[in-house]
Length: 365
Image (tube, rainbow, N blue to C red; front, side):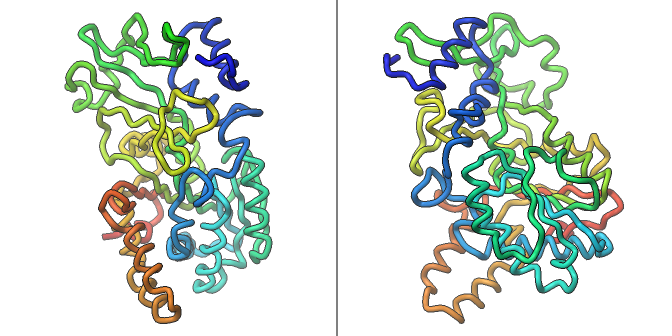
């Protein structure tokens, strides 16, 4: 390891020297959210000049269709006069800006909204304030979902759960052992596995995972964020829409990755300088929200969600009113395509709703 270490590398090294190899989740949390040097605390990572591009930045169509989904969900809720519109991890505010513009099609909806944004990045909050300065609704910021005032709620989480810390275990001849981050003989961060197996781990694993071959890697996250989501839907009524990349059923596989400047990188290199993510296990997410009594609908892939919400019709209308037909076609392919650069199949969507609510829009087929 170089003598020219950044402060976050020094802190991780200190912790390992004191307590031994650290869980992958602890390493990931430090890299992303350490208050002074964490990746999400120090920069705006989104866009062509950043490290990655999210669907709302690809085209206005994405946010507009989410706005239609929210308005239709509000109608299913009985059109409450005061509804909390909550976004978890709102990026630059682009999704909500476009969604609120489109939501005007539902009479009375925008007048009923108070917008609550759950954001820990001070730089992105400043950008959100600029993006949303002209929206016709009150806007408030919070550190956690639990900080949002109680009341009927519609919640949107686009690329939020993938950035939550993930743990990993490796299957060995003697059972599943936790994968951890250590320092190798050359002084670099490296993976290792715990000496002892995780007690009774097989008892809580899906059958398909229990039968995996040796050296398989299984990932899991804390259920607390999903439980909070399910509890919020149950306590106050309403629904949530979760969109993220991941798998519909629990499965083995190492999906822990780093992205910087729109390219993949070593997640153990240069802590704090790359975005770290892992695929979302939608089966586990559904299990957690349903433990609170909420109903999980889906997942369906992003292409199906957007098609059911009318993205192809919206694209045709945009092309009829702009000379940038090629750009609209390219955005459409990016959002619903299934090729290596398409988001349509890799990204999934799940709705979480109070059981008294009818099937949410796009999940009623």
